[in-house]
Length: 369
Image (cartoon, rainbow, N blue to C red; front, side, top):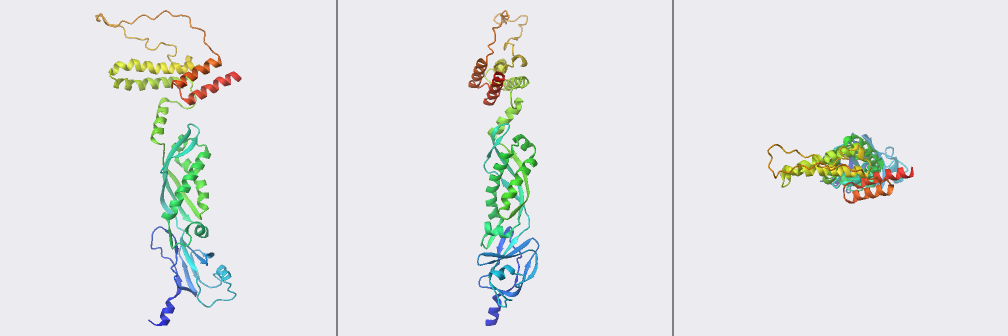
């Protein structure tokens, strides 16, 4: 090989990127000791952009097209190198290519539940999964903030950073949106729209454009989901009205039947289970001043007893007649007594903290007008 041939091979006549590797977002043209020939050709394909960097400073950026490299096509680089006239010799400059096509089908998820405030449940922890797509929109910003001078920068590299950004943005946007969890779970598009706006701003700070963002599934941790199922089953949401207490009593009664059947006494324990459900409903109704609105609130649990049949053995239990009704003692209707009753129910676990707070607020509201 002659010296002329060796020197000739050190000059670059054509700069282009064929994107042989999948998932590469930024690629540095291998310069080594090569120099770019005056009048060399730069080919930038569709879905690509090219950028010249001179001694660490970003110079000219090119979109799709075919360019002849002269001082006219490299105005910023010409200024940085202080070329006051047409240069006639090869020059050195780092050249980076960027893939601007949309990166589709990228998965996101919450490895750990994120905690947000909720109108219905005060605070909940949710998990969510879905898909998103994005692309490089600003090569200069992407270069200075993420890819830097590395030979190649892949979407796996950038998505490791994006996952943390997405989780932080989701927690902030969902917490500030005040959208109840039940609405989010029932309309995942609503949740995606709420999060996408904040995510687009976060992506933009790195020179990226968020193309699509969707939510595939949204769920609660297992224990919270079980608590929600129980609350839905009882037909309770918010404050306790007479109708809701009646529904809660029926729910407790229905729950007592399968539990009693599993006890040692078999179905013989159903009576006790039914009484337990009725007593809880009556006690809660009395504590909240709603006894008149709850079915069976004034009845004595277990007062209805099967009548003995003819020929029953002597040792059979015969129901005793109900005692004569006695005048009811005057009800203590002072706010202090009502609050004391509510506190007693709360301490015994018969009502929840939310139920107690709601009833307490009603008593105080009536007191102060």
